[in-house]
Image 1 (spheres, rainbow, N blue to C red):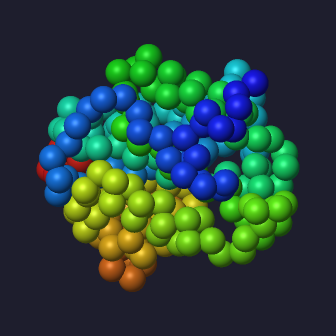
Image 2: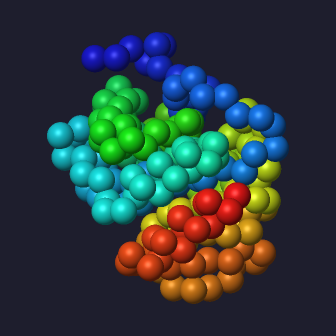
Length: 209
């Protein structure tokens, strides 16, 4: 079992991991992605690496960002940790499996941020409306600071309105919502991500960055 002290925790409820060794010039836009339900099929409170399966069509999206020199950043809420269902050690194993599955399809993530704070949590994780927990923009802003990103030109992909709200609050202009509808959320234009034409639209947007 991994020791918490050896894990990339910026604080008790915030995981910030720089993955790989790709460097990016300051001012690049990023591709932000939620994880569970966006990159991998949602299994509820994911604590079993063997249960991880990628959603169809997502690896080519990440690969396209890689090819364009666009940093790819995962931003994921993990209330299961706050609720005591599993720990950061289990998160590490599950997340490692997701990254391995992506790598098998030539798709690579550059940074992973995970927030475990939740009002139903225990001890130091029992914080309601923490600035790092989506729909708040804290994880996007933290990645923006660490990687020197141009957030206004960045894109976000998620499966919940909270993902889009986080993007809007971080100043992003475009988002894609899994199984969603065309909508506008403040200054954020939301497109659906349902089928092959939607994925192609997202790929076009990435290649134009």
